[in-house]
Image 1: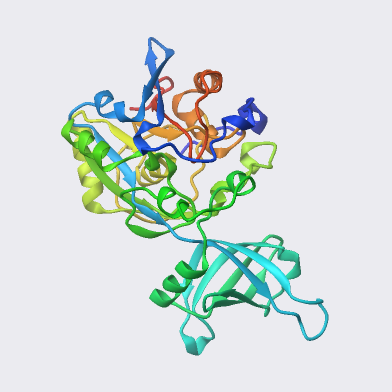
Image 2 (image 1 turned 180 degrees about the vertical axis):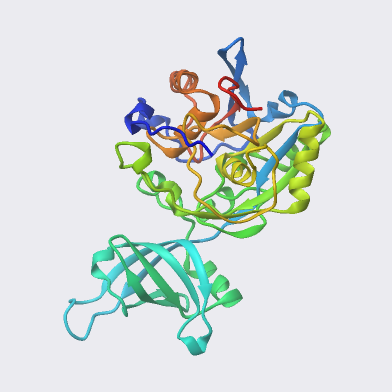
Length: 374
């Protein structure tokens, strides 16, 4: 496989006023705006629409692929008790779970094991106990600069129930810094088709869908397939490297079943287009597709990093929210539809007061065909 050449990260910078970043979602969900970016003779066409217009922009025989992962309450606040020797008094601790490792039997000293971003990580060491309340506690198994492996006192369904009591919705940092997480976020930071627990961030393009919109898509002759990719907190991490080749993506677990792969391949063979709802579905489908464009069963982690020069093999259309400057997600949409085209689209969105990021508006993109690809 040929990998894209490295690029400077500042190539993906653009001006984004802070007031364009949405702190609350619109109601109803499908009342969000939709910027349709089309390709007309090599030029990008920009069309201001609404998310509820989506069914009319698709064709019978197309397939819409959604991510049915469910966000768990992965944000925890706890206390590390005072150490008997050294370390001072109790320390308030924040943990954001981002990767489930396994469950340990009680006779091996614990329950569910998770990797977590910790604050303040430097005040923790292996062997420290942390009380998160609601009957949930953990022991630090190991720690590096900003992360730790936590071994909880519960496993399986008992852990899930305790986490539901003790945890909070892990809103993106740029929202959490400006307002408190509220009870309503548990529902509105979740897609209406969420089914499988495991994400610590929402597949946010899917937040725009209502049951009414899903029915309208089906009535338009568009099939819906739900794959699963559990989104990790690595999606919130900024890109600090100067070149794309020096940025490390966090791996995320995903699954495309054999039945789903067969259905997608059959639709494409008949001329149908694959519409990915969100970058998470896209990254999973592209991970499952071979060089020949055939989608195959997939059940493992992926750390695919898509930047301009990548040759897309599976996805024809992408519906996604507006992303932050210098982010891996903005790099992905530039790879899909062209860097100049996306910078023009984002400038249009800023000027016309579209709302950005997780609780913001959306865009519908067509794949740039120049330079090869299906």
